[in-house]
Amino acid sequence: MKQACKFHFFLFLILSACTPEPDAAKLDAFSKNQLHAWNQKLTEVIVKDIFTPPVASRIYVYPNIAAYEALLPSYPAYQTLTRQLNGLQGLPTPPAGKEHYLPAASIIAFSTVAQKLVFAQGDIETYEAEYIKQIKETDIDEEVLENSIAYGRMLGNRLLNWIQKDGYKERTALSRYILMNEPGKWQPTAPGYMPAIEPHWNKIRPLVMDSCAQFKPLPPTSFDTTQHSNFFKESMEVYQTVKNLNKEHKEIASFWDCNPNISYTRGHVMLFHQKISPGGHWMAIASTVARNKNLDLMQTSETFTRVAISLFDGFISCWDEKYRSNVIRPETYIEQYIDASWDPVLQTPPFPEYPSGHSVISGAAATTLTHLFGENVAFTDSSEVPYGLPVRKFNSFYHASEEAAISRLYGGIHFRPAIENGSKQGRMVGQFVVTKLHTRKNAAKPPKEIAQTEE
Image (cartoon, rainbow, N blue to C red; front, side, top):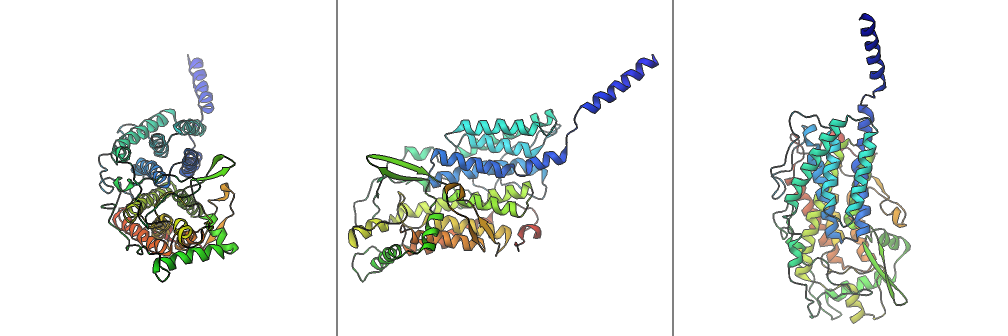
């Protein structure tokens, strides 16, 4: 009997030695950069699906909110976005009596929401399956993983109930946009003469703003074709800038083009070239700085979420004014009243001119990032490298946003007031989000280690 007991004891030791114990350090190292990877994957899908810039901002923001809320119970210094974002309340918490690994729940919540916002749902599903396979290789406890997946899925689905009430589906039932055949009003431009993009985007529910018109910019310059008028002078500035463009300014225009769907003709065939959206460019900047700062997972989630929210509300604010003022594009005006053979450097996007979308959303994103990390944060922006463009270096987030804004003049697609007033509008949106949205419980600003600037 003693011999049998001794045998079973040694057998237990052998089996225990063969059973891998979860390696917390390995698991956390695996999880640390997952939000970077998932936002990059989301960008790839957005480019593939050819979503417009406003719609792309919607696709970025909701999965990141899901990831943030799923992580929250593990980080008591942070607070929920419920009752801070318009209409958001009643989110579930992890079921009691079960052990969870919330970084995994966070990714599943992100994936669950993202799948419902894109056309290429299968790409997200495949990426999720690969994620689950990889996290299992860290020797995470199977029951803990199952609990985490279930919680992430539950939270994601609950958020989808809120998301579906933001007016996105209803906008398709609204009346078709009708061109205004009046002097000074927007008209489609070559080569595709595409119809107006998202004329009803101001019907989308903002996340933090009280209304789409909360931050209306100053009125645009009154349309005029006489040579002494301000409008003619602004048009001549665009005309002369493009005709005398130097190499540096041309590079700036190309770097910030961010046109998700450039069309061009080859013979009798029209072809298309897809690129990153303006919002996607700023999400990539957020990722770059978060990596540079070596942020932990929750800090990274906070960064992505706050930037995405500022972009989302920025697009709503911008598009509200675009279809109210309905200003003609430089290309149309210059070809009609100055030089019929003139062409812009960049392809004119299919929506009204005022204000500049790049200026608005860049001002909003830069204000958010400056709040999180401080002024004079130098960084290298490699967002456009996958699209054949070199890196650019910036001394601060506002430096980048100002370059993004003026790039529209260099590209020949915006007048100066749309750029300057758009930048002011974006900064007001960003500052409102900074002031009203609280992700930390006991600090008006992020702690010192987050707000530090880079040398």
